[in-house]
Length: 490
Ligand code: BG6
Image (cartoon, rainbow, N blue to C red; front, top):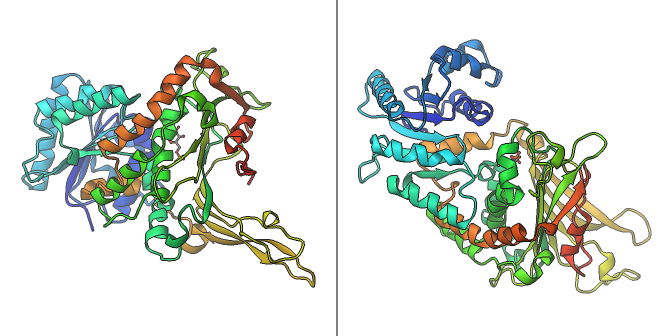
């Protein structure tokens, strides 16, 4: 399916996200003939620069291609300078849109408003779009007007509800596209294909056969130049409440009746609502937080530019999550995410139960490694199934054997970026991979009490050395199970 002619207005056009993600993604869609020839982009930000200056500022971020293609793509991009809370900005925008519509000879272009600004500016922009009639749709939703929002979707349950009410004053839920870029990753979507396009996994995808699941999103980078945002947010809000829960929900949810936006999101919601709330009286048995300390080569979190020297913001969270439903009773889902860890790796590792009895002399069931299926989300996208097998030799030699599937080997290295997929879906009006408001509410309901407890108990903040696998204490989440976190070593 190809998008119809449409217009994308990007607020926050001079920001990093626009340059590093949105423009390159739109360019790749253009190269793949998925950006309609009658489509346009208007970048909007405060600095007073010309269309030409804006286009030039984007050039270095556009993937390598011949000059003609780059220039013809850039010719579709315009710039509008203005303050987000000034009505005249929206009047100028109306005028600019009318000009472009006239150029196409179409009555009205479909529109996406991409809010690539700090979330604090959403209440300035969205009502103004509404007041100026820029987001008005007829009852059938044609021509469509979509509004794309980046996280954070609130700071806690209360603020998320306030944000939601504000959005719904101007927009209908069908117009709101809340991005979680993890859902745009090929390998994350592949979880659905693996589970629901094959029969062999379903019979064993439950507490009868699975011992536990480990979900990791580790990064080697630190807070970089995002101190202002990050020190206020912390890892739980930045990664857990959204990306980590998104991965968990796809791994653990029931099969939706169809692969459409509401069927899929209904199942995700049901799953998140089945997560057991963290017990306040023994919180540290279920969820812990930590902050990175300096190593020989990098500063600690508190020494990073822009971070308060006494900051208690967490840069690492590990949790043991229990899901109270038939399928997952008793199966812990261990999840961890952190900055400045040993290396960048996101993966979902499913560890199966050990055999109930060993028929091999001298080998107890506990001597046989449990089978493990690892879904490698990044950077080495693929899948690995580790099983026990005989090693060559006259004696009974047993060892682990890995069956590897690598995306790069099979499909080449040109894996589309998450934003490419998500921008395309937005232009096609497909909300399947965007988050619905009730899912946001359910996830905040789960994590807000944790944030409140941490706010009171500052001593709950642990530490770990930059470049390590995280704090030692994270292994305590496994209790007496004899399992530990998988090593982050490559
Ligand atoms: C973003 C977070 O949503 O995801 C960042 O705000 C984090 O802090 C990033 O670095 C990780 O994304 P990816 O795709 O590099 O794993």
